[in-house]
Length: 163
Image 1 (cartoon, rainbow, N blue to C red):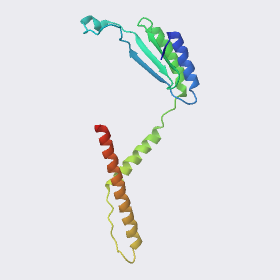
Image 2: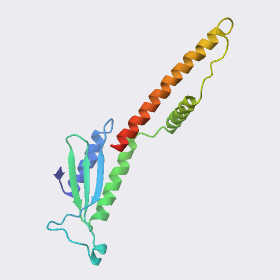
Image 3: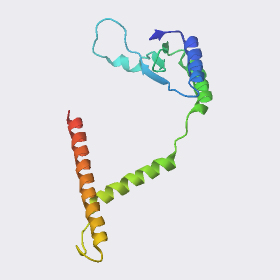
Image 4: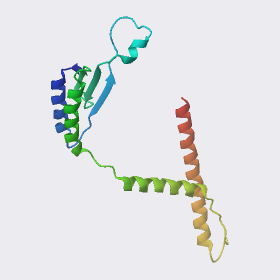
């Protein structure tokens, strides 16, 4: 991670947004910088009003990794410029397809409901209605297999969560 000054960092933000406008991702992280060096000590009452610098990091997940430290006195000016760059770069973001997400959720709920239903195999074994009975028997066997797979998935999730 390369520590650069604020102006260089802002220029790197805009160049990375331009380079990843067609495809790619950019990660921006902000955190309060606490490191002062030396031993850690218990906080006192005057620490509540203390202003800390802000550490901002930028990466594309590959080779470009930059960070900058913004002092509290420069924070307002930095955020103004930073916000302008972010707003101008947000046009390349992909809009969420809520209709497709809703359809997928409904399909998943419908599939779950179908797994809960039981298929009753009825009708004559021979004669008229035999094919209908065979189809129902095949569907019942398929449903049982799907229930078994769903149960195994749930158990695997539970084991992974417990680990």
